[in-house]
Image (cartoon, rainbow, N blue to C red):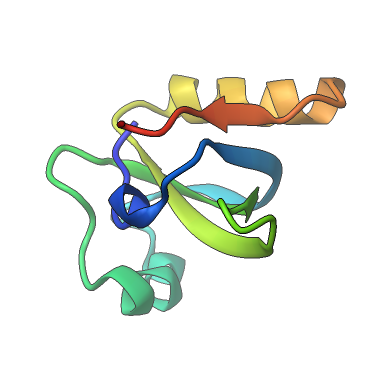
Amino acid sequence: MHQKGFKEYQKDINVWQILEGPLHVDDPSILAILSDDGHPPEGANYVVVASIENDMGEMEDANMWFEDKVDADEWISHLQSKIDPIVIESED
């Protein structure tokens, strides 16, 4: 998984819900998502828009980038079948 902008967070990030996707980088509807990031990270082929809890305990939408659709689908499957979030550990 590729992420932009998570280095600013000091604590772990909790991913609670997938709001949109996965979308392939060649999908025309991705243009609205790219307006926030400018362009996909190197090697990323799919994006999902997720509802995350940032290190301040606030909810926000974030683009989560994946090389493979299988990986994105695993996240979606986890979040649809479990009540626990996916935790992205801080890089401290």
